[in-house]
Image (tube, rainbow, N blue to C red; front, side):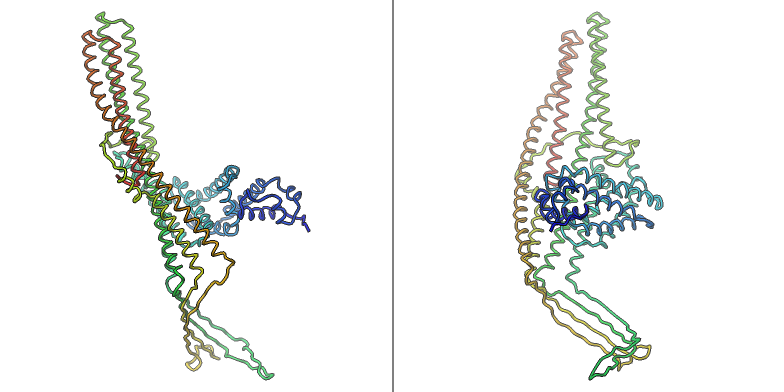
Length: 614
């Protein structure tokens, strides 16, 4: 019998459950209606299609999350606010686990483009509400207002961490997250003073190492990666805790206002005394768990190592960006020098033509043409200086330096040609490249997860020891020796899951398939690393040849220009020959500077591919 009375929220809840289990594309409107016991017309009365259902779910959850944050009132400080945010989101996500699974299903489906904008709007609205709350708290605690965005991003990263941990069905230790919050807030206070330090730095010369160091201190993604590293280090301690004895102490006092009764041979008899005391201390120790405890500790270490490699990956990526920007600014500085040199040359040519014009050796058109050349060089110099200034401004922004502060780059724009062996570079990349090591760790983690699941087929053997105290007394005082005593019991327990519907076997098979996927990912990454190294080495080989050729071209072009200038003064060479010699020198110098920049870029890319200095 179909039931027709139903609410849109009930429909949404059931549909999201089905979507999270099977995926949106694998669930029909007919299946949703049948699972709810309603007709299709009734379902279509509320929602025109599956997209409409998901949108409705998004709106409902968005309103719920908005309400959660808005209702946070009367918090004492920023720390308390962040912790409440964590606890309330954890509670919300735990109650709506189907929504989380559905969300990730959407991310991995063709529906992602339909709901990406809606999801981003929901996240942005929540951040705005959090930001308003933080602004009020920051005024009370005298924090720098420039750090508001940093705090909002930190809170967002913690919320993302909660979602990912719940998705992976891992236990969340709120106490560890509280420690992370404390570490972060201490860092924020230190950061206030670091701004002053940065401003002092900005009036000094900055070399490439300084720029990299400062960027490491300022980059939010890197700081978050370091926080996650601390979280996973704490997880190691958490898993170690399961290997240690579990000790519990209990104590109780009971006042018998009316004594308990016992019935014997049709008579009731009062038992016990007026006051009763008891206490116990128990010790439980896992003796054998089929390797699950040890493997869990190893797994935590792998997660910690993965987080460390993620930090290295973030550093390498940031380092490449900073070095590339630094090289670009040095290149722009050299272009300014080249344009200044060419302007001086054109001005000298203009003087020569003026003298020739006064002596009747050239026409006024030649002087006008020479004056136009000077103007063109002046425009080129203005443009080159603008490119250089924009580069400096971009660097200041990346390093968190005040735009009004003057900085000067300390670095030479030259190269030392190096020869690299493909096999040596490839071997080093496999040893030091973070994303490759992360791929290996992912495989190792999956293999350990297989071992843990296989351990579920085996029993857990534990030892226990319990020391108990009990005593009674009619008086309101501690029992005398004849009315109190101690007992001691101990033993071994065995716990074995006999049948769970083949769920464990299914999980093992799933993880075995994941191991195969990890192996394929490693092989594919090895292939891509080889291609990246080979391509970069070929580029560097071509650039090296170009460098040698361009260096010689600059020397020859300089000699030609000097000779042509001399011959032009003497009236032997023409204006056209002088213009050609000037253009030849300018092009040669431009090509040489471009070759240096290309070599530095390729060397920078090769260091990133390898994962470290080479």
